[in-house]
Length: 119
Image 1 (cartoon, rainbow, N blue to C red):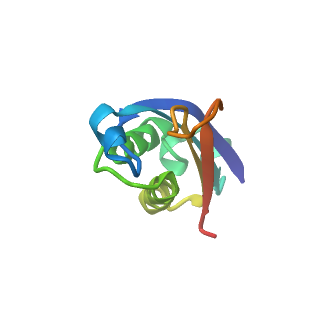
Image 2: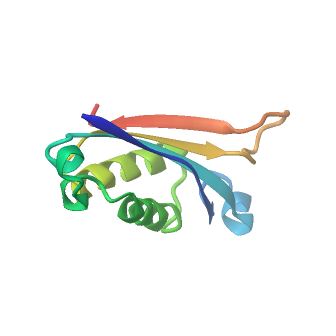
């Protein structure tokens, strides 16, 4: 096995429960930790035997910038499932979504949710 980590992928999107979140939008940050069957990728130095992280980024981007989700939990789950579906060599995907401008009455750096698929 090997692990591919993609950190702080940044996207502008309109997710959230409040109407203002849809209207204004905000930046979301995504981390993906992909546990991958090594197969022959490491020994053979062959991209087709592993996960192309450029393609994986595109999968994440399409989902984050696509239709609105009310919950970042649902957003993270959809990304994790899509990555596992797209790349059969992924044994598990842990996807973290950070929302720095969460609408709370108080000061915080961000709200963060991590979903692991399969569970």
